Length: 309
Image (tube, rainbow, N blue to C red; front, side, top):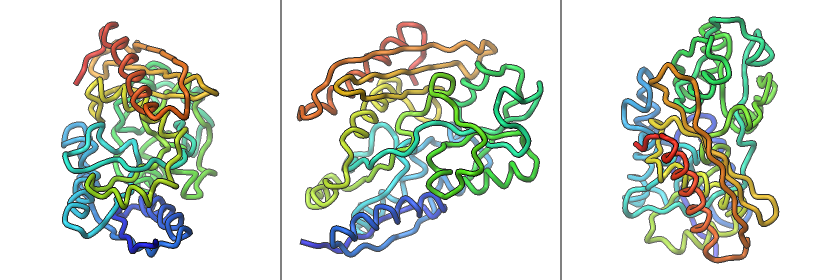
């Protein structure tokens, strides 16, 4: 039976692309769908790092209020912006097929990170990217870069930076793939947990909405993302955590690579952990097992000296 649904979404161009993508998928199932655009606190505070003003939850709080008061039945998020533990009363109902999870190098002058001269200025406010860049090029200057994707590109074009690092997925989804000069291998720039994936949040008391969203869920993406988020959850992960986690599923082998660095230290060295296990994709407990594998990776990092938040 078709339903009338409202999607709560941020109003950035990328967030609206994602919400409209979900809208199109639901309309193909016969549902009537409209968008509720909202400006979140995370969109408003642009002069401070997220790690200092409340973390990733600043991007979703207003959307959760809309779910709670019935203005909307689902909220669409970039999954890497979703806290590891949702507030009571909410559930991550669906994870869509993943776009490219890697980081992209964007510059008007230099084809890749290696070509930068010493002392060149790189823009990012991600602690994960900061520690990974420092490992690759400790001679560079890293300056904060906040704002939506278009704002970041504008700051680059105005000459504030010699290059910036962005998620490849967002650029590709907005038709800006031509701005990508280079895509980092995951062996040199390990992605953030959930990067490139879209998650849909609902009220946990809405099994009817859960059922509607079930056909949109991509199980392989969900398995990988649950493993990555398992690492972050065990580490207390948020945007305050200089942590990278990336999982692959090759047949029945689920593997996770993770890295942690101390962004407050002069030492650019990183701690690494890797774990894998055999899984059965049809196992009803597979997401729990994926999470547990991520927790094992986190324990390995902690045993090497990584600090939990």
